[in-house]
Image (cartoon, rainbow, N blue to C red):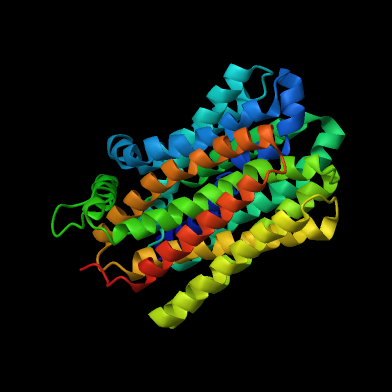
Length: 414
């Protein structure tokens, strides 16, 4: 009896430890990427290059996501789920260490390693939750998702003060320390933790079954025209999101917005996305297709409003103008992102189909998104306040809105 109670207490402690590990990993899933635009100017000065040349650092993660996401399940099949997550967190730590060096090539290498680690974690975290805590999927998934967005918000809030206190190395050291902490906590809490009610041998078999798509009644999204609406919606919002994260700080700096205010303004974007991630899924589940369609159209109007605001009145250092732009942009991006993620499950009948549709959506979507920061960098170098950027933004928002409306109204994939 005592042995059973000790086992239950140990298992409960392991679950809480796992939750902490997932929170720490989640905090680092976006921070190493979102930090770069905030330190773009001092980093360019340190490397003695034009800031526009460093736009590659914001494009690299998207390309890596696209290339390595498909290999994550195969890596887990060979190494096991726990080892693969450990390796991924280790790559993020090594990448963060490499970016400490004042060398462009090492910074690029570090960014690639971080991207590979994040690409694997993006794919494997749902499998981790299903394997270790199958009865608390909602709690752990929500907590993990919120920690990712909170990491972005904290990064935006603290980067400018850290730059003022200790320079660019202080920011890089914090990222190294945070990724190392997440890695060590993950190793510690999972050293004896196994999926509930299974042996280690069965655990690996379950992972393979969970991660590998089975051929029975499998959806082929690349050959299904309706599935392309998911890809275009996800790709378009990702393009706008990563372009915003990469270049909005530089645009505000060009208009002489104070560095401390830039970080605060960028954090507004992350916080409104957090709010949307909590509210929108419940709304989508309760609404009819017609109701969701109107919600999507309203979301598109937010994007158009943001672009029109930049066309009319961007030549200002006014804090409230840029805060408004950041929040409206965040609401628009968050609305489209959460809609895609929720409808991936609502529009499919089987987990295999969900995985197939999600894989196609993210692979193609990140390919589209990778174009954004680089192309905007070229336009920004030519004319930071150019009209063409904002007109293209309106066009992209219209395309996303049309794709999202199609996505909402397609029949459930059977």
